[in-house]
Amino acid sequence: MALIGIGLGSNLGDRLNNLRSAVWWLENEGFCIKSKSDVFETPPFGVEDQPYFLNACLLADFFEGPHEILRRLKDIEVKLGRKPRLRWGPREIDLDILFIDNLVLNDEDLVIPHPRLHERPFVIVPLAQICPKWRHPLLGLTIEELCKDIDTTSIIRITNL
Image (cartoon, rainbow, N blue to C red; front, top):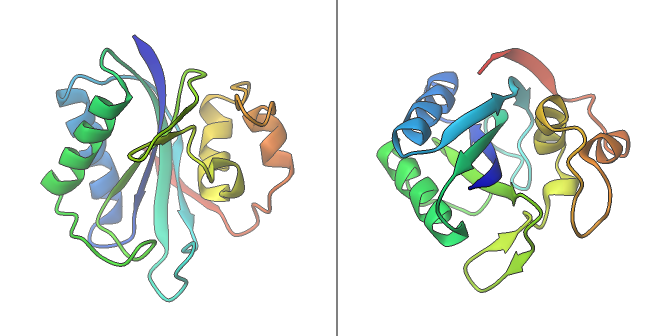
């Protein structure tokens, strides 16, 4: 069994319901949710001309390997109505593997830990709530330490996940 950090984001439709529905689907797909961050409203990243996002993170246990985890997350996105669009563009739901324990994986389909995790306040802030002591296996820094190096002024706590 592996401990997985999962990032959730939505900026189309009923954003909060999209996030909560994703949690429901994760549980029904066999993920054992251990901890959930709060929900934060965040400005868009990458493509800026789009609605603000709601973002959250969670920790879950799961018995399958990384590629099966990715497959299940992508299946859940489709079930929740995600449509193919511009990279970093608007989306109904986005589910990202942020880390799996201390695994380092880099193949053509999957990179773990998430290659831009440390650059994204919308990931670091919610992760700081649920796993501040998790240490990035490549950078050697904890989430708590990474949080000190990013600008969090544009992130607003909205509610519980």
